[in-house]
Amino acid sequence: LILDGAQEYTVRSRDTLSKIANKFYGQGNGYYFPLIMLASSDTVLDPDTIVPGMVLTIPDLQKNLNDASTHESLKKFFTEIADVYKTKNTEAAPTIRKELLKIANSL
Image (tube, rainbow, N blue to C red; front, side, top):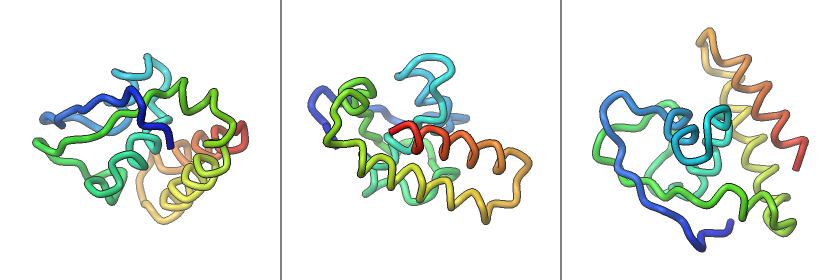
């Protein structure tokens, strides 16, 4: 994972990882939230459990996507997080899983 140029963000009330990814990576890029999880692995253990005050590391999306050496680890992690959504019993879980696998397969 490339952390050169990463930013820090303090979670606020009503934030989700998807909302934070959209804020930093651009609207429509919310499914790249596992990149934030990976960079903040000491803080975020569950993609649906972040709390105000947590300090997250926000890596540069393009630097990581453009660097072929990160693709295998990103692919593995996105697939692992997609598998987490197999067990989540929410209406959005199947869509989230599908989108994460689509990203993983594009890497």
